[in-house]
Every structure is written in C-alpha cells, then in structure tokens.
Length: 256
Image (cartoon, rainbow, N blue to C red; front, side):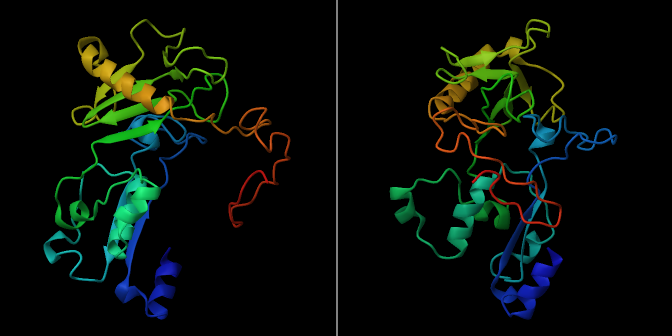
C-alpha cells in the first residue's frame, strides 16, 4: 500500500486523490493465537462481529474535502463496503441518479459522515445468508442482519428451493439448548455478543427474521468450492478448479 501511495505521488496524482483503506474481514482462527479479534466475538467466515467489523480509513491531501478539525479523528458510524462505490462516485463528480435508474446500488454516499462527522445514512447491514447448513465455506452462524444497534444471528437459515428446503426461515442447532437461536444482541451495549435478548424482544426478532426472508427470496444458490459449484444446472458445473496461487501471485477466478 505504501508503494502504491509513493508511486501516486511520483506521478503527481496524490494531490488530487482520496485513498480509502480497509481490511476485508476479521482475522481467521487458523493458528494457535487466541482471541485475535478481541473484544469482538468470532472469526472470518462467521457472522459474528469478529468476522465483519474491521477498521478503515480515508486519507487525502485536499484540505477542502476534510476540515482540519476532522483530520485524525475516529468515527463509530455504520458503514459497509458497498458504500464505497457511491461515495467515490460522488467525489469523482459522477451523477449517481443516472446510474441508479438502470443499476440501483446497495450502498450509500457516506462522505459527509466521514468528513464532517454527521450521522451515517446507513441503518441496516445484511451480513450473510448461506442456507447450505451442512456444506459451503461459511461457518456457523451463517446468517445475520443488523438494524440500528440490534443484530440477529441464526445458526442456519433455510431458503425454499435451495438445498432441498421447502420453507424459508431460521434453523436451530439441534445440539444447542432450546432458545439459543436465533440470537439477538444489542451491539452498542454488548459489542462482544454475549447476552441473547431474543426471549424478551420477540417483536424485534420477528421483524429481523422477516427482513432476512425478504433478502432470501431474492438470492441465488451460494457458490461452493466443489463441483457442481452452484448447482447441477450451473454452466460450469464440471469445470476443473484452477491451481492454487501463492502469497505473491494475484488472486483470480478459481474456476474458468
């Protein structure tokens, strides 16, 4: 990242640039280092906050874009990776309304919130819906959604027509005590997701489950790393996987 920044400066572009930087996910659990995402719960591939809440920054030399008093400050507002595109479009002077007519965006322009400290226009985040309860690369809990400070997590979530399911709705782990799932957490008061509030807030649970159902009705079968990848009717269901790349090779498509 530093090399890219240095090259932009060498080419004379840095004076007219805004740089966004963010991790793509929380740390994974593949070694013996415990609590890598502490105080957040969970790891990469999981719908807990430890797999999704990551730090990020916005940097620019352009003094008119970020007031002096805002430089070096922190924001705890709610942003999602899909917000970067409309935000960058705004900064580049692109008319978003024209694009939205043909290709509606999921994100929001959050530059005013970043630069001026105003509230984020985003109130909801869909973390994931993966209805492949016994397969797929997502680790349980596989589904979660957040509205405001309240977050609902599901061990798994059936979607009618996918993986043999005839109904759409949350699935509980048969090995867990009754009432464990779905889990409802107030992330403002309990960022570590330790206190399940579902039993006393069934109205909120019902609302968030219904939101998950709405998104589930629009989804396609999740991609898997083994044939037929996205179902037997997938055009490349029998394609061979590309060889794995090393740490110094670019990541490309893993199937043709």
